[in-house]
Length: 443
Image (cartoon, rainbow, N blue to C red):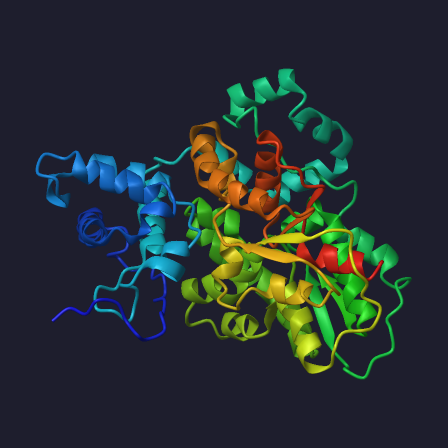
């Protein structure tokens, strides 16, 4: 007899992408239909992302109003609307493993997309945008010119970019730093004095591609807060974590990045350092996605057990040794956007817990997807879907009436900030939570 839901903690099975059945078209089609039929009978996920409304609408409009009536040619509509945010698995689905129905919708979409990649059915431009390290090396060197070129106010060049690359003319694109965070760290970390402390903590900041190339201020804030709290800090950026490649179903490239980055970070772990990540998506990759793609790799397992999100790590200091004195009130309330990839780390709302340490602070939490989803929130073909998912989140943010908005996902923060501007919601800044704590320390 089938059970409705489960009282056991959810588990995720390894992604056995080298198994011959993984990309077998017939077996994949059968699995898509099995899962779609269960989703059709449940429909709890109707309000998460556009994948589910599209699926249910397709079924309702089919000849016999069932999955059997669906043409397999319609499946890409559902797959294309999935951003791999993991929220259906984490928060809604009652049939995730160990339930006998064994549903992992995001990883099924990833499996289908991997077959699409093999059959050369995926668009080429997003795969080129996924080459973060290559693109950013150019972006850093020519940051002034490229930032001017990419500015949304530069409508002439943005229209050309839209026509050539399919990047929506209305999207605010990330700006490039004038220097990498890695270079900033080399030049400045010794001048930022470490406060005396008895905790003897040591961390290596894995700055992530976004902080290293696009949002240096997050790294600067993390460095200053950690040193203020007596933590010995080093930095490493061996390369991108591979999340952009995961979104493009290039699993071989993800594995290659995992092995490359982990080999460098493990050297620090062996010296007694803990790895601290500054972006939610990258923390998720190191903690969970890499071990699922490389379940038998002992080094990957060891790394995953020695990784903390920056908010998570600061809260751990607060809980065990207590934070350094000097935190002062800030000039307004904060709405914390609990990003999907922060939620998927299953660590609680650490951004909220950390910011609660600021005296007399007003904090509100919004737990809805921003809708950005990597290139999903950039490409003209999907930008409207990104707006559809993000607008309800922005309405919740508006209702909180706070001065600041914070998110552990920089792309989510950027997207929500733009939607806020487009809907006359006023927020001074979209910041990482550690930047707000640094502000409270007056660092």
